[in-house]
Length: 281
Picture 1 (cartoon, rainbow, N blue to C red):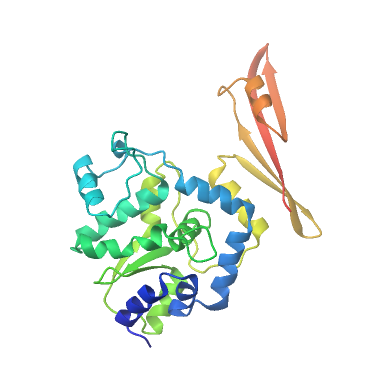
Picture 2: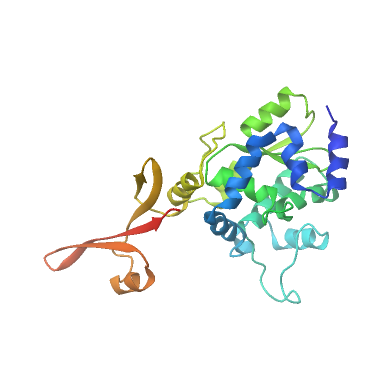
């Protein structure tokens, strides 16, 4: 079996290519299918946009302004501000990386070595428009799978699901390393959601099933209905309670395909629900 050092050298030679990450730790064709499924769905673009939208400021993070300034000066963080005059804003992926830096510092890893892990968070893998870490983040957030970031002493890092991690241990691919729970970090970022991982073994889900899970995890619906045609999903309906939240005319203007249900008692609206509908190809 190749050593960790050999893997690190190979990674640099391959320039973080997808084939390297796909084959590393014997992921094989099963992983390729999941990766292609994620890439092939329209919902992938929605998830990617949400993970990369910069809408969080330093006040929402446990790191100080001074600490983040220092990390930026060392190249661990990219600065998107014009002439440094604007407030920094961070995406979910940025926050995930900041929490990872913080965790690795607690284990005593130097910042110059931690920097070696940066590419897997932000560099697209070959033909795909997303990074390998973005894909695994979606597995933890949408599919509620156990996801770990395995980091070695030189800063080389690789994300693995629970089953991939166990297989790598059995194959004696990894020895001394730091294990970081991506699920725990994501829970810190999305504190108002219950994102405790529930599944240790990955399932080869269909693009339609992925759409269902995305609606369940991120839509804020109180009920999700699935309609089938010959065993295949063709329509999703998400029911949301909007009582006391907004004006009916605002909802009508914003919606494309929806049903509205209004109930009143003694001339007063007591219930206002919206059912959003989405056709699945």
